[in-house]
Amino acid sequence: MGEPLSTTPDPAPQTFELSAAERNEMVAVAAYYLAERRGFASGGEEADWLLAERQIDHLLTRARAAGVGREALARLGLR
Image 1 (tube, rainbow, N blue to C red):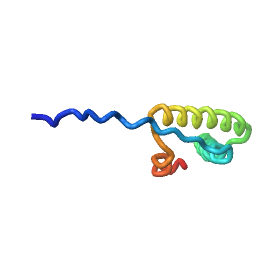
Image 2 (tube, rainbow, N blue to C red; image 1 turned 90 degrees about the vertical axis):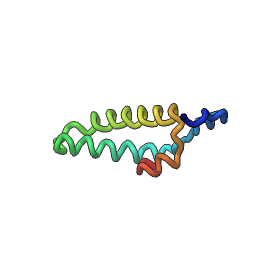
Image 3 (cartoon, rainbow, N blue to C red; image 1 turned 30 degrees about the horizontal axis):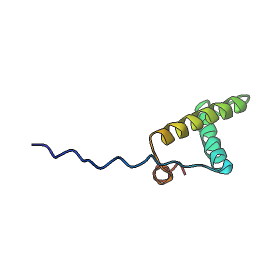
């Protein structure tokens, strides 16, 4: 038979905040990869940056909602 269900409540979701410099670094790396994907053609830098901001903000919002903490992000290389 299976193991009994735990009656221990789930831990509270972890929350984290990034400094503006940390977020900016993440956006810069994402924008670099977007530019690389389009062959570094001139004229798309602003679009790369804006898309990277949306992607990073979406990733961080989902990570916070899922209870992912700063330590887990660091293990993934994100901070």
